[in-house]
Amino acid sequence: MPDTSFALLDNALRHAPEGSVIEVNLRARQESRRRTAAIEVRDKGPGFPPEFLPHAFERFRRADPGRARKQGGAGLGLALVASIAHAHGGKAEAGNHPEGGARVSIELPLRPPA
Image (cartoon, rainbow, N blue to C red):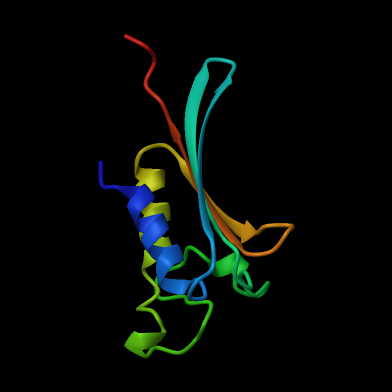
């Protein structure tokens, strides 16, 4: 499986303000017969503009509409993260943390124990 967690972290490193703190959390959850693992990456920057959130996982969408290389990239990072998560039966979510900063997470199913 491609390393989705690296793509999430790379996106945070690329777009968070220089010197800001980036948190990475991993948790496992058991609901009924379904086991999942979730990876969440949060920065302590300004967060996503509210109008961007409904489009966060669309290809070529960027929170900053500028297309210059030094401003980030082509707007494919979060789209790839969501695509990989969905391909493995998971989901991706983006939002702003109540205490500030952008938050992106993926949740993936875990195999049953052998």
